[in-house]
Length: 103
Image (tube, rainbow, N blue to C red):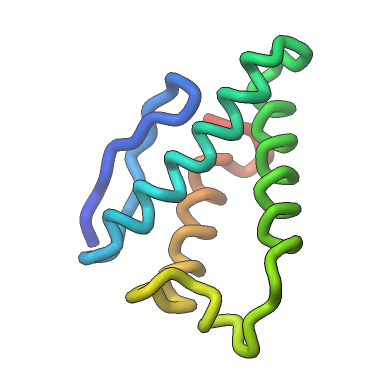
């Protein structure tokens, strides 16, 4: 497993990334950073934790609003697997820490 340094909302994180998953992880990071930056730039929310929660809700809503594929794995990007998604979730959990706040 590779380690990839990413930046979200000006904060650097080192994330584990399976071989061949760099593009998928980079796209996910860009999406999260774009959502969080948009919320921050709107100027109504200042706390990083609140920005992160709002961004997560926005992204989850966008995913929920998509037409459902017959199989959950079929909705993943080409070349991605359910294990890749599980790994991404584990990396996000690790970045958030035990208390659910960004480290």
